[in-house]
Length: 132
Image 1 (cartoon, one colour):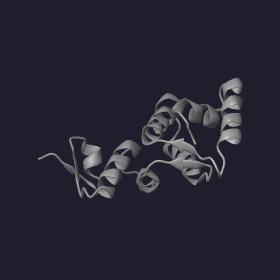
Image 2 (cartoon, one colour):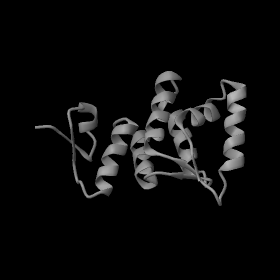
Image 3 (spheres, rainbow, N blue to C red):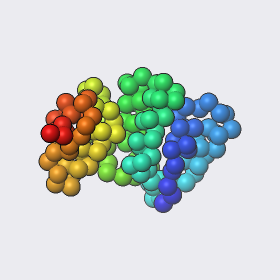
Image 4 (cartoon, rainbow, N blue to C red):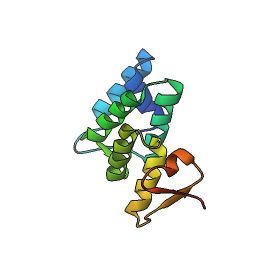
């Protein structure tokens, strides 16, 4: 199993640099198989959303589509897969940003019923509470 960094995912999705996009596609095609999955960590997911939304200014629905496709790719093992799906659903519903949603769902998966935050937008989400 190999790990995939954010920049490999970005080049594969965005396709702005033909040489790097081709190299990323070959790496994923050749090294990420049903027998030898490519590993996508939580930090990579968070960075990927941040880069697509921030640096490339992709709309929320486009970012959500990219993350959805990544989560559905059988040749990839995504860390905290279930929490990532839950965070994606909340992102699509217009709740807090992906990173905040993922934090809350990872905490819940580990038995933490509330996640406290100073982030007012995140605090409106059902798994967050504002710091008193």
